[in-house]
Length: 249
Image (cartoon, rainbow, N blue to C red):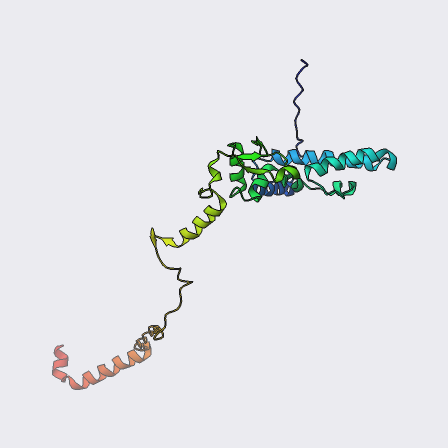
């Protein structure tokens, strides 16, 4: 027996780790395809970078020298389902990371309607519910070829084989629709926005309460007018009070 092969890293980290646009793009891809972390994105980015590098090397050669290499490269990509049969090296340079992610087993299980979400598809694969031909597939990142795509199904002993299983997409969305009709644990009629309007007398409009009129305040007397009134009262008192009584006071 020979020595075991050396295990190498299958991905390269980004050159600019704190690039905001790249970070946002990676986060969107992780959420869209239900990936575990960003390493899965970097693995497929490294794979794409290698294919592009091989295509550039072939384009720099003469037509006779690159003929064999071009056929091998395009044949491999066609078997993987990444390019069409009429593709050229220019089409290889226009590939994106999403092209590889669309061929992942996890993505195809979700798109074929076997799972409700990409995360649910990943759980099914890891738990051994997915069958490709005659073998059980337990790797969510496995790139499915076009010939294998039609062989995707559940294993014979999986409970998901039953069409009445609650976790299947058809039953999940059906259950959500029936749950909307139930409020407070009791079945009621349609929501108020869907109910037909009642016929009869028009609704009575309530009038808004009228504001109370403000009470008028008594006008304040000016100081000069008040002093004048006091003086007049004093003059009248002098005329009325007798002189004798006035002296006693």
